[in-house]
Length: 286
Image (cartoon, rainbow, N blue to C red):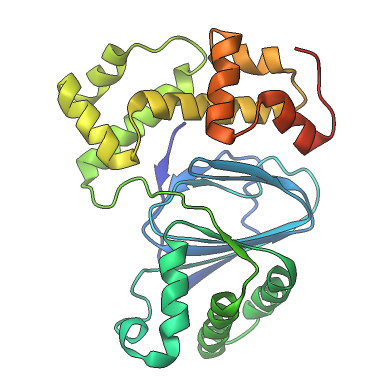
């Protein structure tokens, strides 16, 4: 899939950025950025796609995403009315205070957890969602204070799950970013057919061995693992759209149904039929 490096600037007179209903539901925006991001969406069902994680949320969703973690806009494909609020801030927007002030110790731990993504549920999701809605009406100073209080609510909550999603690369230069974008774009365009390693290596201007080391460092996966994961994610989308298992297999680029079922279960701990039944309440014959 094509991945974009999003460039983010804080709002004028503020140390962070607030986006309200950016209306990206018609855009498949697979992207990452060095900033932390809180995302709250309510009023509709949708698909949450963060790194290797793909799931369906119902009614609302609240996530705290760390730096350089690739993710899809949460409103992609939604066709009903909804509200979406996004807050983006740099890793050091609190300066040295986050490390030195004892009263911020729980928030510091929250930011550490967010590096691999935290999802919130229950009363925490409802309460923080309401506070994020109120945030947009306040002055910059009040927004700053309210955001600290929101962080404290999240930090002290037990209603959360850490996804363990890894960033695209802990450190890289612009050339490396472009090389990775080229690979993602090529896979996005050609995942439905057989892809030879020589084609991917040719995009990178590296030797095969150097490319393999580079790709593993950037993504924590081999290229084969990445391609299988990408195809499984595409298969999940097809299954969620009510395609049957065979259609999802060949539509996502797998050439063998048995290998598809084996790969799907290895990556998701359930077979495709079980995944489909769990998400949309029924299964189709293979």
